[in-house]
Length: 132
Image (cartoon, rainbow, N blue to C red; front, side, top):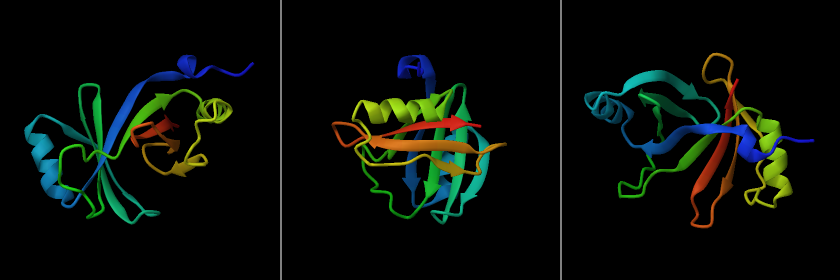
């Protein structure tokens, strides 16, 4: 029997949003008390990336020079899961893989991260993510 999504989710992982100036954005959030948990480069997207953390709140900031510079400009909400394959199977079986996405891998963190994305009813992007 496969794991149900509500048993697979461990909580909020991060909120992701683009920036036109990573250094300025990092400096701003550091003034608020955030620290850089990871700074890396996404080869696939050609973007510098910083994960900023304060307590259990994590932000993924990536410099793509396409930030809309207006309220509501966050790009995605990431939900942490124990088993990305089980989450993917359930989302697909529920007919919710409306982006026709597959499981992706990025070499972030110590052992990498696997994730996939869907779109919510208000065009919000929801990422299911497992840090390996």
